[in-house]
Image (cartoon, helix red, strand yellow):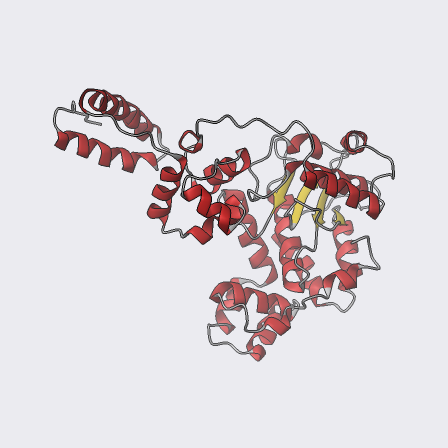
Amino acid sequence: MTIRPIRTKGDYDKAMARARVLMVRDDQDSIDELDVLQVLVANWERTHHAIAAVTPADAIRFRMGQTGLKPRDLVAYLGTKSRVSEVLNGQRQLTVDQIRALSQHLSIPVESLIGPTRHEPKSRPSATSVAAVEKLRKLGVMKAKEELSAFLSRAGSLGPAVAMLRKTRTERTNAKTDFGAVEAWCAAVLVMADKVSVKPRKTLDAAAARQLAKVSAEPNWPSLVRSKLASLGVAFVVLEHLPGTYIDGAAMCRRDGTPVIAVTLRHDRIDNFWFTVLHEFAHVCCHLSEDRKVILDDLEVSPVDGIEAQADAFASNALIPEKYWNEHISEHSTADDLQLVASRAGVHPAIAAGRWQYRYGDYRRFSKLLGRGEVREALRGQRRV
């Protein structure tokens, strides 16, 4: 690392260009070099001209330019198209959850996203949290007159996931997520999971995942998926998503250490159901630990960290191994091709159709093969959904 004093406008321009390169690196040498450059640049600017402070909108636009993102790509992190527009135009202050989402998913430094206004945590439950509680009462998971604090306390005695949730706000969730509602949902999952009987835990690995995936091809898969997971020592819970949660699935642990897989059926399709189940199974196999007892997933948000990308790949390969896919499927495949690869993999054809749509970005073709509207009805007699 060779750094020279900034004496001219040319030196300043070179230093700024170098700083832009270093800003996206996270190794210690780059961090140290950037620290020194910041001091030199600040000294030059103080002596020669005043530079307007970089705004959060500037930081976001800079990152968008680096990664080729469009404003529509920010909807998952900022909430709506109108909010994206307001933030980029400097008309709306970022919330704490939006800052968290942008920092996590786009690797924008938190310092660059914090404006002059302090963001205080909410002092009372949000409207969505209240709506979530009302829904849990209607579903019979909460007692009619039970307060949320008492319900959370009751659930907390059944497992550590609710308490751990406050420490794991960097999961695969978007900026619209209300974590008060999520906390209530996780508590409800633990209450329901406590009533599920399971066998002693078996070896949970890729081979077990393949066997689980093959259950999808059975006519009675709604009952088999629950019994198969129970035979492996995993509790399975279906609890619909609550207002403000935006969750497809979660993996967590009961008080006795039993892993729990929970799904919401937010997207009522056979392909989505099985991908979610196998994705959460991957978390149970590979990622739940003493330090990570709850993992939440909004699968509409692109994976940005190692465990989410790993769980996606694990689930995909468990459902249809790449060797089968590459042998039979291309952009020009027919419905018969999808039936064939599903048969080879021993899974439901909807899974092949869903993967083809995702891989090739055409969500109209093969849409009748997805099993839309079939999962909730199939599971209705099995468990509360």
